[in-house]
Amino acid sequence: MPERCKHGLDQRFCSLCAAALRPPTQRQPRHERRVAASSGVYELEDIIGLLNAVQVRATYGAMAELVGGIPRGIGDRLTRLYSRSPEASWVVNAETGMPTGYEAHERHPALLSNPDIISSGAELERRLAQWKSNR
Image (cartoon, rainbow, N blue to C red; front, side, top):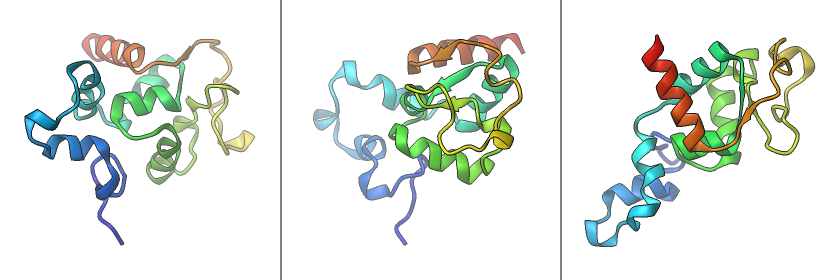
């Protein structure tokens, strides 16, 4: 079985980890580095803590922008960590506003109480930094 990187992906295919190993002349342009720079700062557990504390939803895409990887892979990583528990149900599909593959009893009871959905990594990072500074 191939080894997994810190982003939960097969190490051979993780663009974020591979970028860190490239010589500086072959790295991404400056405007594309933001995600790679942020990926080492926040963990899935940090973001799930925020979403539960403030009871707001975030898209799989926003999560992927902040922690690295692809949106489709975020669901798998969350399932490995939280086994479709209500605390992880705050991460949702951008189109439906609901967590993918969760049964009604697996969703947080307050999931739909707030209409806000964080849809960008930048907004998620801003809210996470603010939340951490207020704790």
